[in-house]
Length: 104
Image 1 (spheres, rainbow, N blue to C red):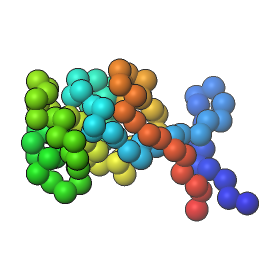
Image 2: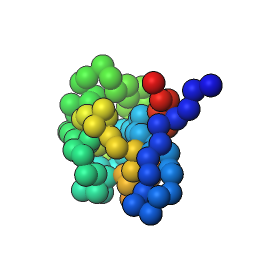
Image 3: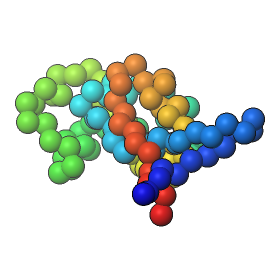
């Protein structure tokens, strides 16, 4: 039976970190709160046009052309995430998906 990676708090309590696995750029408003609170440089604020030009972001509906906000957050280095979920706690649009990691 596989178990999740766990950590221990200073007080000895065991907890399971939930690592960021996805950031929904479609709902992101580019406020930068996650960027500011992340202790590990996991995110990057980029121009929305860069994402539209890249194949990783599909704007099927063309609904971003008229938006005033020209930047969105992206995952710069998800492998550096420590699973603290601080990004989700400050995100006003619930853009993040997290999951625990299986122990090897």
